[in-house]
Amino acid sequence: MKRFFIFGLLAAALGGALSAHAQAGEAVTVYQDPNCGCCHGWAEHMRAEGFEVREIPSSDMAAVKTRLGVPAELASCHTARLESSGQIVEGHVPASAVRKLLAAKDTRGVSAPGMPLNAPGMGPLDGNLVTLDFDGKPFSRD
Image 1: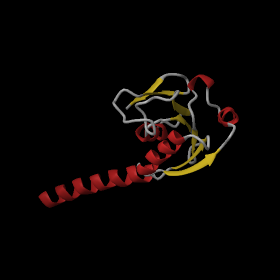
Image 2 (image 1 turned 180 degrees about the vertical axis):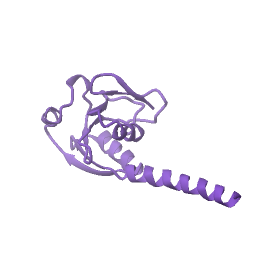
Image 3 (image 1 turned 30 degrees about the vertical axis):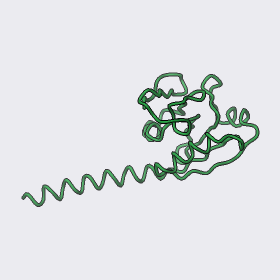
Image 4 (image 1 turned 90 degrees about the vertical axis):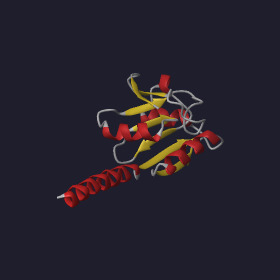
């Protein structure tokens, strides 16, 4: 009996780990100014978290943001699209918030507006980074 209980716990833990890994393998296309180093820093953060990141340089980021529907007041330096869902990630949003976005199918996008110093690609997370959904409502705190 005890052996089955332990096996059940191991199976549940492994299942959760595989589920998180599968979600982390999400393909992300990020559009960024070719001269911006912090954008590449965000892409590296996402890769380290298991995402498949394709970086596309763009000299007209305003056009990219307009095409992808990023609200002007939530703009940052780079814009990413989650390939499986079409959802948009604007700026230095942490991978944990991107995973939350993937689970929130009714949310079309999230943003870390501007250039927050406590965000991936800019500086260490400190628990005070607030990301917003595209309606301007708080989405996550990391």
